[in-house]
Image 1: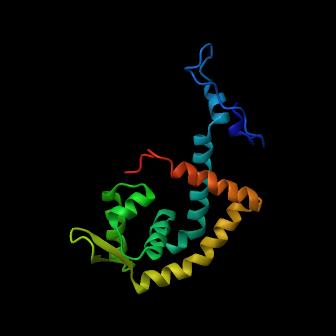
Image 2 (image 1 turned 135 degrees about the vertical axis):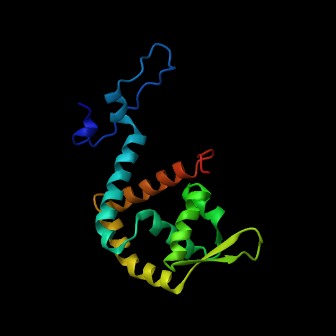
Image 3 (image 1 turned 30 degrees about the vertical axis):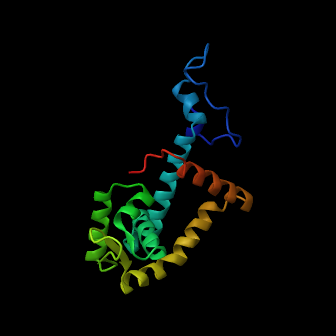
Length: 173
């Protein structure tokens, strides 16, 4: 049984051999899972999503929705294209989020002053109020998620995740 399905070892196992290396064999599924950063990121993301959903269920907001509202608040007037790129989703998918936000009177689309073909997104007063209510709980949630890590480990985690997210050719639509 793969270690990842039990409690993983505290030390990171050696990365699997690459199948193209002369004389090496491809790793077994269990070997690959034990040392796969992608798999560990997926497990962490699943945990975060589950924990967020449990905490915010009664508020009617999902983690992706909160992320979008935070980005719109931090960048008033951001275009839908720029917002879609920032979170790595298709513009059509973002359009569905924005449509819902408009229906809930959380966000408004305004004509862009820079490009007549695009819309600038802004929080409404109701959207700002909701965000102000959610932020203390979101901050507490993140603190609890990161509680097992020291300040140095948190900084290292953030730096490494940012490096992966910002790498060239990241496949963001």
